Image 1 (cartoon, one colour):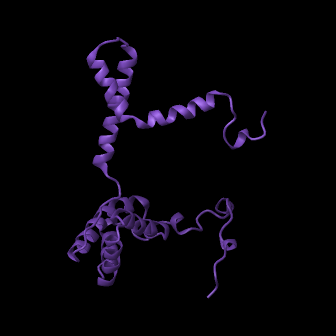
Image 2 (cartoon, helix red, strand yellow):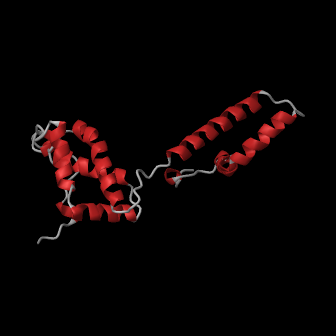
Length: 184
């Protein structure tokens, strides 16, 4: 068996010099019917050893979504089906694997993103931005409501305090960054 070296890889731009249609994904797909594609994947994945391997991956914390995306991407790259078909059968494969893995007693992490936390952060960022604009536009001293809002915004924006010294250092005129070396 030959050992792959870094020199065995294609050079950048090599795909642009070859004949169009040489790659499997540049050919018509081998399967175009969604029912046929779904059956292909289900038959391939409905093997106890395969389910055990995926269950092990989920057990150590790998979310199911990247597993399914990898499976369908490989099918697209080998010319089995189109990208559109991969997007359409992906949720079906996801649900099949989820049910099979959970039947093994393994908790499945759907996705590694916490959508609720992202939405809450987005709302908080919006609140802070609007509050800061309001406070900037209405600079009245002695208003207890504005003082409370100012305190709330300062408590929730520790990053803003950390960024201030960086901006001050750049304003002092000292060259910063890789490209500034040697410039006088």
